[in-house]
Figure 1: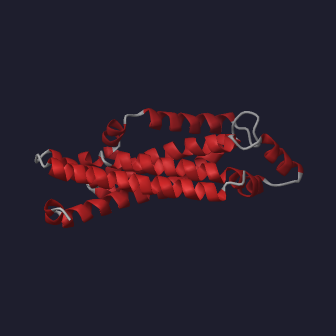
Figure 2 (figure 1 turned 60 degrees about the horizontal axis):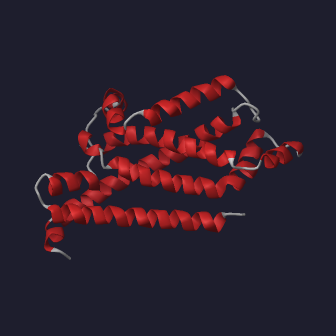
Figure 3 (figure 1 turned 120 degrees about the horizontal axis):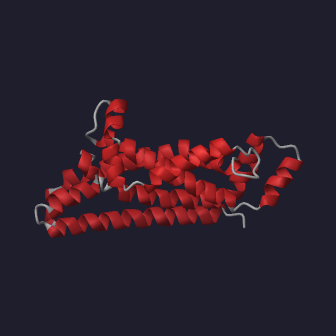
Length: 220
């Protein structure tokens, strides 16, 4: 192991842990809230099972506004909200708030797109058999779209890792913040390169895992 990595081993593991916390909370928020929001966006569209113009327009506006924000500006804009929710706007815990919000908006749009790819005949067949809305969602839509949902989540996770590198502005820490503070600002280019390599390896592992799982569960 290079000497500089040994020198900063404790800090590096701490930064990796902070990244995992931020990304982990974001994934949880994306699945817990983003999945239902994306499903509602699909079901409330014109011509769909529970068409509702007001609900669709409201959710669509929320997703569009959040996704249109430059992420750094969103982090700064949400500082008062973050402070209200957890009592502080500084630290790894505080960083999870804006990350979770962008995660919900990001994944919900990918969920909507995955569900739109499901053949319309699947829903028509389910409805003709007397399936309830809940049964249509869980026994037909999610089953048919599961490969796309996994790929969408994989893409989202990689985006969350990228977003987490910005969280140093609110003291969120993480690998990206470590690379900037210890590598770039202290002119330790080799240390910064090692951090980039760690990020690349992490992203490649996530992409490989997501693609493999998606291929395994793809019915087509």
